[in-house]
Length: 275
Image 1 (cartoon, rainbow, N blue to C red):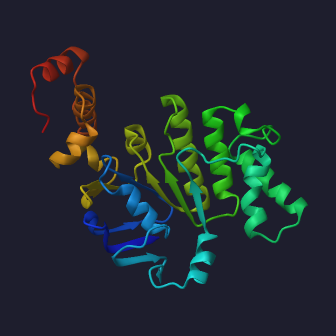
Image 2: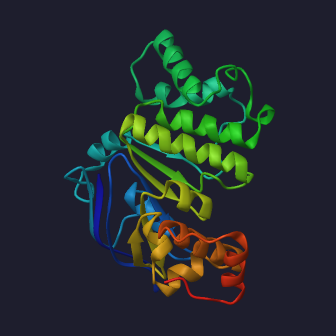
């Protein structure tokens, strides 16, 4: 579990975060969503120590990250896996070498043990035969899976993902979402995901924090978001008529209202409010 309380962050006169508090649950996919400039990226960087908040507290499983010495923070970071937006693979290294990199940096394993662990995590992301390939030789979705393998190779307790579906087609995005979700459950990790992808929100959003202009605007899960009356949230999530219609239909399904296709279309065309 990661808890943060009353986080404030400014850059000069530019106030980015104002009094943000929330709890990221263990064993859950915790999503941070919001428009560009809402503060979600700065918040995630504060959580991992890349930025220092001006005030407030960040707590990892009951231990204050805010008050830790730099040495203790280094130890904690070894329990954190990172999946970067562009995967951030080393072009000159093979898939195997990329995944082994954290083991070279932070473990005391011999080469045989490292090789075994690399093969385990590559198998977990369905890349058993990709060891000797270079990043230029694999697809965008495969690069993301290599990034996930590298992020979990040290058995982290916490996994941070920055726009994991950026640049991917919808079908591949769903594969990545499911993989992140399954790994989170399998290893009981606290997973924190920054995303603009509404499919991710609806599919794996177990604990969602919606940011607006640097403040916590709404929290809930992917079921509650359908019934939210928050106008800012609805304008962000259901911006198009297509998504608004999808929301209306989901609400009908959730409430057990039965209507044939003709009646459904007539209701939507007449602009009837789903209550």
